[in-house]
Length: 504
Ligand code: NAI
Image (cartoon, rainbow, N blue to C red; front, side, top):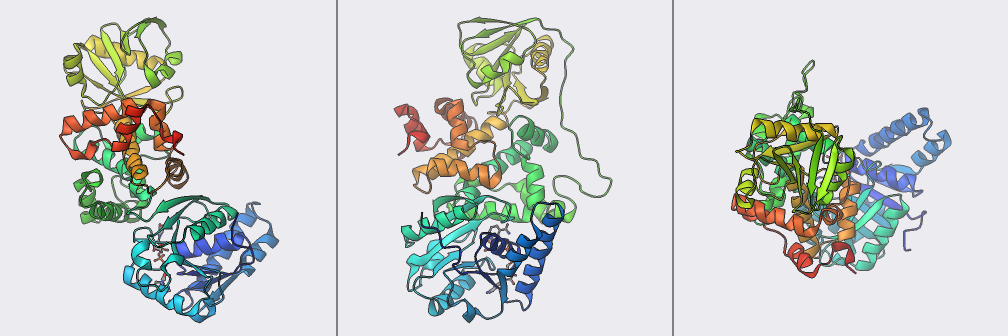
């Protein structure tokens, strides 16, 4: 354990949303903290803001009044950069501009002691680039907090080409001592979270663009089937489309136009229209007073079903069986569920009509992925074009008997949750392949940074890496796009019969 001593003096430069939050975190951990901003009075104002916020926690009984006083007493607003000369760690959270950040660190290098660690909270600039030109680039690292810093547990410890691994470990241990969940990552565009999360937005945007379903239905599926805290449309409305679209564009450009990260014209149009989301009163949804939130689409059936047949192993879909209010007959087969004339199966990434034709099935209903079939409230399905009304009604009635709301999508490959999770795992696999971060750190980052119900690699393993790779192969074949090409590492793991968490 090499965390910085609690008495070590920390400086935070930039007293905006992030800088103030980081200063609060360090002061709560017991450090004396100097806060500097180039807007006169901004640092003092930020400390007043922290004091007021802590006051609310005291009122709620979540913080002792003397503890509030002690935290605030450790925070010092300063106006001259020279006062930072004896700090052990200086964290920069100023404007997101490479030249300005480089200039600041050059200035700091000239006045700080040799042991001072320099850190940047940048979310999109390269740590390697910021450090280039410093006399000692090895002591500059990324310390990437998430907004709001006092609340969000994740901190990405970002190493540039020259960064000293021992200092990365010191920052890791320090972040942990501050009550955070740190992960190590190399400085590549988007680091972990802003890279791996892109498909979460991109796949919903594509489904909307293709008319697979409306926003409210897709959001409800992500929450009530996928187990995510929010769907992509409500989340990007909250983040702000200007911000989310800019991050996507910067990641897309940084990966030389890799279509995995391709921005969406639908989102661009919102940005062009000034519909930034909640903050401007309108995004995908209308936030004006009295506006009604559209309801998700669902279909219901009055058909009665008293038995169904399970043929072979349904994989993760097996967890649904105890919820069915019908008798279940089991026999050997290829992972199909039959009720009346309908055949139901977990999607494998092919369209329903295509799979029906290729596998010689009639009346096929494909079922989307759920995070947990034992507790999901909603599920997406799609039907082959040949389906009879009776078969469709029977299939829906079977799923309804399990207490599920059923949302019918157009015949789209990989449905909604399955294609999203497959693509999250795909980008995560490439992130491991490129030695940017470990599988365990990526999974932790996505849980702690963006509240995913499970890390994408562990989730893919639960479904099976072979079926996930097959879903991606089928998506690639359907669209004819590189975007869905499976990561080499997924293919290798399938060939080896190994998993991500076998990694040393
Ligand atoms: P902000 O605009 O709220 O605050 C920036 C502060 O830095 C302002 O108070 C400004 O007066 C001050 N400043 C600008 N140039 C300065 C300089 N040369 N010297 C001293 N102070 C200076 O910005 P925010 O959102 O706090 O972001 C700061 C940094 O954190 C950026 O690098 C951003 O990419 C990163 N970040 C932002 C996140 C967010 O959700 N807002 C999340 C994670 C990282």
